[in-house]
Image (tube, rainbow, N blue to C red; front, side, top):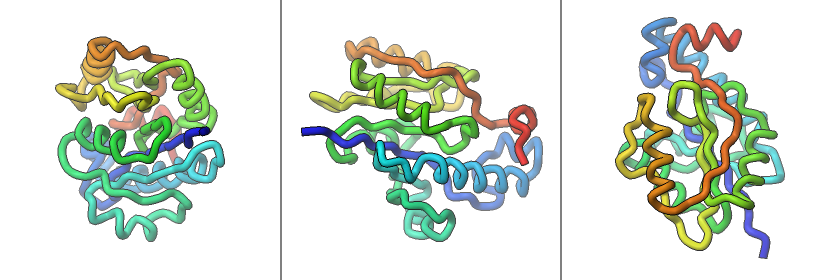
Length: 200
């Protein structure tokens, strides 16, 4: 039996004055809101219709999953992220998705393309896990084969800082899981990040 690939895009409901707070401090609430809304929409346009995987849009807060269809026109299946820190929410997705490899991508990485996702699933053919490193010490993508069991590596990870990738890799090593790596990309957290991507 061929198992289906599952792509989960993690996004926050785009509300003025909520989310992307570091970016908003540099460029203002309106520009930060506009970036978040457009970046998520463009990512969905590029990835959600690809027949090589089923795409889910995991939104926080949970009530936004009901309204999300009106925020972005997308064939992606909308699901709530649930409660807890980022690790708890990603772990939940790893447990609730149907059988098959799962790849999670953040919605604030403008350079993600279908080729990156396809490569991640290819790497999961010969590795237990895959990471897409970010240049700030975190990662823009994480995926798990989930066979024969689901062993999420997110316990005790220090999110939002330069230790997130190192902490996750330490967990993967402790669990005895092999890891494949994608190219390093950058997310958009500051005004300088936004300018470097020539965002319009």
